[in-house]
Length: 149
Image (tube, rainbow, N blue to C red):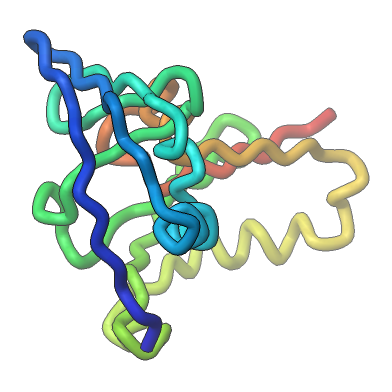
């Protein structure tokens, strides 16, 4: 299990906008921010509220509370224009996925049929902010688009 960290940030709020201000970090705190993927907080990002999310346009990042989502969520595959949904989940504290995820057999068969033909297809993956903008809140965890060239 990985060690957590806590850092208190100062901010200024105006309507649906939060700007981090006057935050001075120790070397240890800076290292923790960087190693945990929060390098953008070393500068003073601006977060804009849109629905259930806070969006950092400069760093193309979407923030949301885990309480807004269920334990299971859906990835969407769009293969040659046809949508397939695949249920998935977040890993537990040990990094393992639960066993009760429903497998989409039609999707698996479709992907298996494409295995030897991938040279003739393009793959685009959307996640986070780009998936939110293109497909909506429900699919922020990922959309995989596979199309013939």
